[in-house]
Length: 275
Image (cartoon, rainbow, N blue to C red):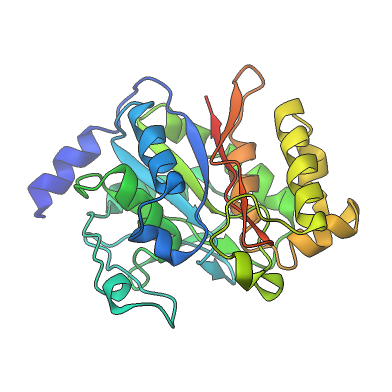
């Protein structure tokens, strides 16, 4: 992709129909190469929204000290996992980046300092789901990192500053999992849809109710909600992308759930669409 192509992309960042926002439960990296109901759900979500001018992804797998945004012209495909088949490591997702969108994102988030990054690329939290939605890799994708030093309320408030991008045809995706406890996976049921420990079932039910009721404060204050969420969210990395998604919701917008299943005892694939 040359400079002229990038300039034509940036010209698309003009006012458009307001884009929805998505939170995608990405689950196992194997979802990138398997055919199942969840990847079908990702594809269906893409058909139900306008084709975006570009994508901004907040992935659980870019967890940093400070806030960064990818600003390279051609981000590399990062295989940030181990112990999986070679076929998964062979996957490339050659979507272009967008230095222009990275710069605009950083400006929107002021006074928070957002540093432009030229080393990261697209981690599997981003490409493993986006490749099913837009397999031609013809839509620019950038990533915004998650500052691990900040509390959930900070991330919820920061996300609100990104709302202007939705008016320019930018699809904002949070990619993680609401219930995500790898230490307590039920390996006998790793591929059994609907398999969940009692605490995982409770976490799914409670968070779903809060999402649909608009009770986002309970979701933000997850650490106050009881043992079931302590098990469901042992670390906040996969949970915080949901917080970014919720921060972008206007009061009048509809929130719907899809891919709403537990798997492997301690993972949920629950995904959210706003707008």
